Image (cartoon, rainbow, N blue to C red):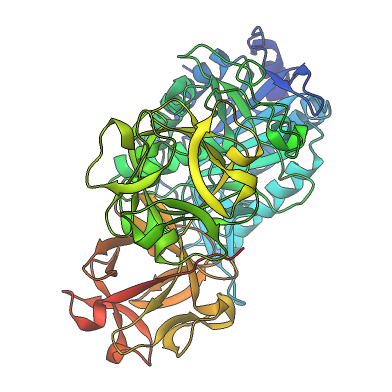
Length: 585
């Protein structure tokens, strides 16, 4: 059982009792392709607040949580320091001492874990301020002034983050708050590469404003599970901070029954948001990028067709079943662009040859990605025909009604949304000269003409029953109206996948559509419960949205007015037509 330290000797005692762990070596390629050790030493600071004494309920489960997190981090090679029941002075002093002692070596990595209460206060000017709550902070509903004098703002955490000289620092908060200092995203994890080693400050919290952390922490349970290897979805031997954030978001929302919505992201600083924290996965054999043929075409020069890409699939952006399988009217749609800038086309929308000669995307240039196995897909056209390559015929056609062996393609993930496709005849798909010809399957290696950019068509305009479009005033941050007569940038929304049947809608300026007292606005700065909608696919390219209050989204009057979440069933005013935003050459 941990004991409660007084700060006068707490940090000294922590140094004595810290476990000396053999550091796990993480090796990544640098910009010259040489393998280098990513970190020198690894340190973690855990602060657990159990016995609150000024109006907040005690959190008895925190002791168990921090013990489990400590053990998990020690398995990862961290030297771990633990502080229990720190008051406001002790939290500040512990952060400062830890950073000054271990955060000045650029080759170290640091983790900060806080388990306790969090709180959000909305300022008079409309901004939300997030706080972590020490054991001696007052309940703000009883004594707000005392609370403010002792609670620690996220802005102070930002100061600590910037003082750190270590290349990578990860802040984990098993506490719920909003108004954070980091750019909240549902980012797609990038491939491990030399860019991973660039400096970064990453943050993950277990929930947003108005949510509470249960005494039996789902966040802690899933954090430990993730670090044990479950967050390493593609089994490449690495778990990045972004992967961990995505894993925790999905799992905690699911296992908390939608009561908690973790938030994660990177600091809003251009010097500290390029890299990614890296753990070793403990349940799979590590494969270094150098062993996996990680050098991409861009690093060798795409115009040089003498240097083939290794035929080894790289890390996919998300598991195929999660990325494409559900809500296919949005998330399965892609366009394929050749190295010459032309789009792949199913002539006639299906039934004929596959061409690489289009300068913009219409119905014939849209394909549905159908996952059929590990790094295997089928491609379906708008008319429901499947792209096929016969065993002994090089020409590719879209002429099959179902998926068989000849309709399955191996997909090779490359950098920057680039892919290559291998047909059933064992040959790679090629667009000769980068486009303007038929597409064939006759190449043994991946060179310039065999590389295609996969464009995910997830931006759209949303049209109401009487023809008006949903609009975010000034691109977001203000009202949502259904009064636009044409499709421009403020009427353009990106669908962000939350789970199998739920989405968030991102505005032009990066805010999210949010529901407040039944009314829609574009003030959501991240994805919390108010920004999540159930997506219901309807006929004729139409859909409906159900908010977390259980009501369907309504274009008042069928359009021309506001947007509400107030309907008990789907009628004409609750139906919206999806008008995809398609790219051009």
